[in-house]
Amino acid sequence: MRASLSRLQQGIIRLGKEPPFRLLARPLIKALPSSARTKSLFDVFERPQYLYGVLHAADEALREGLSAISVIEFGVAAGNGLIALERAARLVESETGVRVTVYGFDRGSGLPQLTNDYRDHPDEWRPGDFPMDVTALKQRLATSTNLVIGDVKDTVTELLNEPSIDPVGFVSFDLDLYSSTKPALEVLRSAKRKTLSRVILYFDDVQLPVSHEFAGELLAIKEFNDETNDVKIDKLRTIGYGRPFHESWWLGNIYVAHDLAAIGKHCLQREADVTTFKL
Image 1 (cartoon, rainbow, N blue to C red):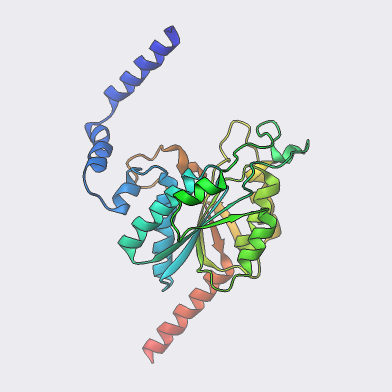
Image 2 (cartoon, helix red, strand yellow; image 1 turned 60 degrees about the vertical axis):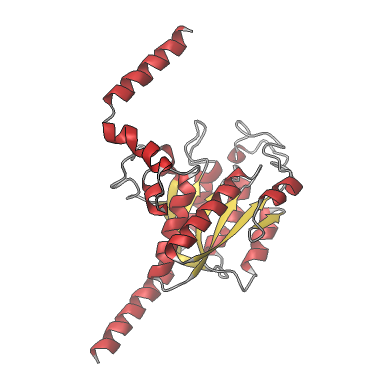
């Protein structure tokens, strides 16, 4: 009881130190009609990382002269995140005019049987964690959303072989395990990849108490960069700039995949366009 009172008192003290602007901004934005950009700036969305990722993917598509993108959630579980991704996609579509197709990838039966391989954090996860009621979830999803059930090693290969997919612009990784995250990253580096030059990434498990770069998502990222020459994953270093709530926890989970080969091609194309204009 005493500890609970102490936490309450600390919360009241923090509120007393907050500028009125910060106390009032979010309730006002929730109560009034506001744009996707405003909702994103003030974290007024159930999964602000998703709205941020989809919005920035659409902006990148427009810079590259594209009118449609794909966004992906790896690790769907009960489906609340995928439904939030759907909602973010519709908001961004209405505001930017960029068509957004949503994909969700999951085993459908929860986490697989784990070994004692430290890379999969058996100290944190258990077999069967995060199961899905596939039938119930399909009833909740929009008909345009693609729910892909199966082992990610197989389903990502099928996606890469799909000729009609629009370029991937945002990906959420919430597969928990190193052994699942590593094959999912193929969507960003395969010779068959179809992505924007810069893909916004959200990694759900890089700031857990057990997280370290020798296991889990952080190890998968490190190995990706060690093994891949033309695509590199790095933190999105400017994400907190100009944000009223720059301390939001999810900002540290946002990364970006830079397709260095594609960026070089765009630079050459711009130089060619400038030369043509001068002529």
